[in-house]
Image (cartoon, rainbow over all chains, first blue to last red; front, side, top):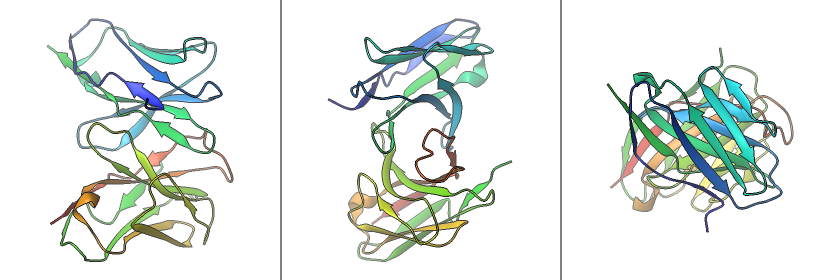
Length: 108
Length: 116
């Protein structure tokens, strides 16, 4: 089993819709979690950190479920510019563990 | 604004060649990292460095070495390139000394390496 698993997608979603995807992790001792965004043929960039109480940044909401060992990302009122691959990142014992990413395509 | 630059966007090399990938950051970051990214796999850490002349192996160091002679520069060396090293190579930096892994990692644009 991979340490960090994501549905690769693609998720094809109409503009304006709400979309959510999860990421599961295997190390129950993990303490820090992040979502990064990677545009096609570009480098990853931090989207948001994920806090225990959940956090929101505009149209984006991140949640952590420790009992079931997953984090989620919810995007409301999706825009064409949200099309990207979303990478889930979990801090392991000594380093960051990266998921392979979920591809999101927003259609007009 | 943090800027991380990599010496080449695209590189084509032959099997057995020695390959140098350079990364420079301009924000006085302590930590620097080299990853490779392959389809269907997450970023995999090759080497990282918390300070000048300091280096630590990541998950997949075999076939690679690194050099950090100056704080702003972190080089990845493929001693004898092989076809299974064809990949996207990403350099990253982050601010804090020591473990500081909670801190944001800033990435360079990546180098797409093709080994023939």
